[in-house]
Length: 622
Image (cartoon, rainbow, N blue to C red; front, side, top):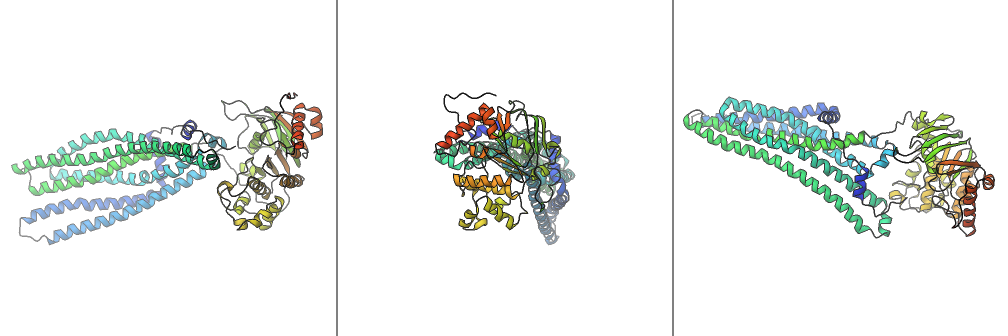
């Protein structure tokens, strides 16, 4: 069903996506360490390079102190100048190597996180995907993982190197003048307390900014997913405004995060400047009183300015942690979504014809969520196979849900579903789905080439297999017309193909898999009369060796079925052949009569989700 272009995407995203779960500090650290652990050796190397660079910097004020003291004597200062130069060059070179190692590791962290998330999200249960906007899931892979690059490497290194450098600098300052150190620490502690109050605000603003980015992705995915509907409805401006509103929300929270980060960073400069003024004033008086020397004051001031770097690193680490914790919360929430267990892989294809599958529904009940009404109320039927079984009934009777339960897109609430006598809940998903060919009602075609679409479910198929299904699905003439044949790009969602062509591609894709059970959800609804007749013959031929279940609304399809299951309001009301059901089931007789009328008017039968009932005609009862 096509999404209308009038729903507010921001509201939809808000309604469908809960706020990221608030993680405790322990859970956040555990999640961070999980991403950090595989790279801890390389991060240790980068940290070591950073510490060596910091150590060379710590020696520079002492060399400067010796230089100042020697200026008043007759000794040469050339050696000290060379030493200072060597310390600067060596420290810079080593820190550059460390920076490269850390940046490379950061990219590796992002890559690993994305691979892990993609692998997990593509195995989510269908119910989880339907509760979450696709755009929001995409933003967790793209945007949220990007924020990990800093917090899992740079933040860790900044915290370690900044902390050690900070302590080492304080130790050197204590050796030079404990009084001036006390003045410096007093100022730093005072302003540091203010910075600590700002950090949670950075995390909160970043979290909301990331949520807004997810809303932007959702709005764009919604608009491009129904692009023709948007244009046909003249809704370009409304959709533009909706995306702009979501983008403005992301901007607003991003600016708020930037504001608090700017406050934190400016506090570092303020702390150093106030400390400098205090040390200069008090240190000057101590020099005047003879309590300390000018050289010592110069060295202390150099250490004070050097203190900017480790303090900045500590603030950076705290800021990055707050930003990363918001991303971690969203990533962990995605990781906690329920996934399917594929189990053992499906067996390799064989050259022999597969045995047809049997299907049994035994008092099956189902509802999509606990707060929703039941869709199935004790559905029971048997399909021995091979042959064709058609499911008919009004819209909302639960026909398509039968297919979803067989595929285990959802789990039955009660009762049993048996395939070849085995409960589907006991079958590994890979083996169960490996035996099934499934054609959805909207017959999705993926972006890529026609060949890639055909091989999507059967990558091991040969050229002969492909040619065979092209002929059977009446696609051979289309391939001959295409400029690059099977290697022609079909566009986003098959936009370069007609509706009927997309439907035939989906049928060919299912047949290429050589299934034991073929599920067709109104698979010929978009075909013209000639192609429908041809494909109906193909399905009839396939049903001689394969069990075929088809949700049908056209009488021409139903009359060919070996058995017909009539469903109404989530129950099976009758099973039989066309002739038997016309005679004994009023609802089926009504549907069949309506289809006959449609055919008499020159149509191919009612399409959509069910046959229309003529005005004034009462519905039959069991």
